[in-house]
Structures are given as structure tokens and as C-alpha cells.
Length: 144
Image (cartoon, rainbow, N blue to C red):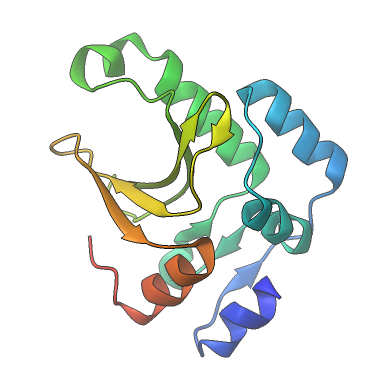
């Protein structure tokens, strides 16, 4: 479904080899979260989707793990920004801003997608679902 959604938008994207359930379980354990169903399904089709200029439309499991750990554990970031433990980053805008799902008690609180701005530490709603995030980001409706 995810590959056909992206391909149906008429943009050239690069798809990585699909992830497997054990890789997803490792990510969930390392991050102490339950990944949202939509993100799991996408990763099981393609462990990363890259758009124009190789922009990470959806990151690989490895990037999801490393970026979330980096943001949560960085002492430098903790001095500059509000805490990141209520966010699950899964993509970026290519300008330093990151797309995320909101977390509460290690679970995705809602399926909406938000964007975190690195310039002012704001966290703003951008789409009601991962599907709409992809459609709107690729079509240019989301502009950050």
C-alpha cells in the first residue's frame, strides 16, 4: 500500500529493502515505544523511502533509532530545547525540522503527524495521519 501510494503521487522515490518484524521489535525495545501501525506497515514494505534530493520521506529503522536516541540523550539539546521523550521522529524536512508522532506512556497518543522546528522549538500539527503526511508533503501542501 505505501509504495503504491508514493508511486501514485507521480514523484520519483527510492525504496529500500523491506524491514522485518524482528528489526521493528528491536527498534521498539531500544526506544521503549510501540511504533504506530502505519509506520510499521510502511517499514515492512520499505525500510526507508527517499524522495527528491534523497530527502528522507520515511527514515530507515536504523535512522529512526539513532535520531531519537540522539535527541533524547543529548545534553546539548536538553539545554536548548524542551524534552523530546514525548516525540517519535520518523522523517525530516531537509532543513533541520523533523516530523514526528506524539507519544504518551511509550505509545503513540494519536496518529496525527507533527513537525518540530529546530529554530524555535515549536511543535505543530501538519497532517491527520501518516498517509496524509506523505500525500501532502510530496504534493507540497505541507510547507515548512
